[in-house]
Image 1 (cartoon, rainbow over the protein chains, first blue to last red):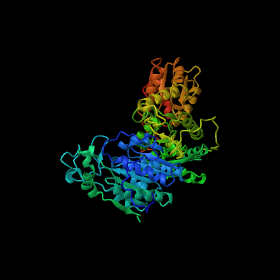
Image 2 (cartoon, rainbow over the protein chains, first blue to last red; image 1 turned 45 degrees about the vertical axis):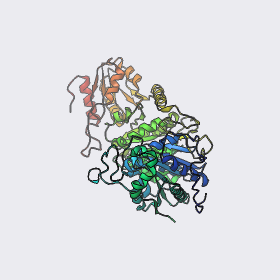
Image 3 (spheres, rainbow over the protein chains, first blue to last red; image 1 turned 90 degrees about the horizontal axis):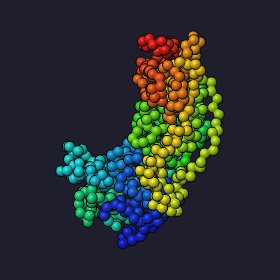
Image 4 (cartoon, chains in turn orange, brown; image 1 turned 120 degrees about the vertical axis):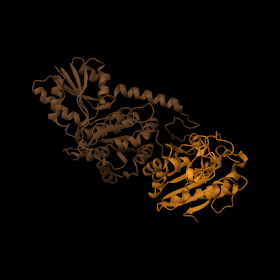
Length: 254
Length: 355
């Protein structure tokens, strides 16, 4: 698929991406993370990066994919992937280097890491899977949880006076001079997936062109961590997270 | 040259091509010298935004198979401990420099420092000449065992100058770094993951978390059995043995030589590796001794290891203590040959130890 193609609306989920050692995964039904990871894998293959990519994986539900992605990987500590990726890229500047992190990983534990990495203009691509909740621990508030969102640590809903406000990380990163491309996609519909894939491609192309730091945030469903029925995940996401973390290219777009 | 420069020169001579650090006295000049020297050999030095990031960057560089290092003072190393622990589990050959304030980081260095079951090999040079050699050895041992190695220095080592020539040293063959990732494994079904979790890949499973931790524990046992290094002197006929490490040990050595000239039957043992602790050498030195004295610039840390080595065969006494200059970073009045000799003399005549 090229950037100019029409979105392939009816084929999402019908084939296993090339860069997987197995199509099995143990994430929950309705989880958006496998869809986002498929977008990443397909884009790597389409850009001809299959044998010249090193990924750095954070700690979250998606960490389970470190075992199944057919990509050379380094497992980082919670929050520390951007620094590890910096070391990888500085020693292997001709390789495509990405991080795969969740919102707890990148925006809570590792906020300083991603901010400095962006400010440094580090020529890597950070991929954020943002579902506004600590999914792996069972549904706790993160720095991107939106006001009113019910979690196990904000039982009556996130309250600005008591819990503080969410960080809209993509917008924050876009303000830094070292960030060349920042975009926010989502995976709640086939159209959103197709649009997000174009963003993913542009993020990686930014790196390949040596233009500096790129970041793509992907809103992903977590019906388990949101305590909503699986089938309600996409609509819940549009009505809550999607209203605060708004989809679109934030910097360096077409 | 200054100790900081000798360490950077030695690391580069050993093939180190990546360094990341955060300025902190008395480590700062080590970072400065790497920043100046690494680009000239095609390497990279990053003035990291924190110690947490510095060690993370070194982690990434190591994963590609490069020789890489970080460092700080003990305070900064406290911040790095989570990564040190997991880098050990991920079996990456990190070298870290601790330009410590005094000798109060002995526990931090030798007990692992972070969570979990592991230790670091800890090399404690007594002067700049030895620091240059042990720095190169550190990279060799790290690669040989695929485990982090600490080089434990201090203010005096970092900031004094000696005439030292740094040339590459040869320590023997090393296994190929076939575990490193270069990105070429993608799509082959044989891609790799470097992980502290022992997960491996679907096609090439790892031992799992428990299995990985057991493998590391077993490796630590092998290191403990084979890598202890020690220097000793004046042990023949010694009725009292002084144990000291690092720059303190050089002062102790002078003091012991002077006391011998005076006819005091005293010798010394200097652990070069703080872990593995040279327990056998200490036990042997203590076997015929009337007392074992431990001089260290802290409230009494290595004395624990000395007691575990001596196992009651002789009384073990601390004759060191906390001593710094007014800044808290530098050399205090206790690090003085006359003062040390006085403390040894008092201890062997069973007088009150003078302040």
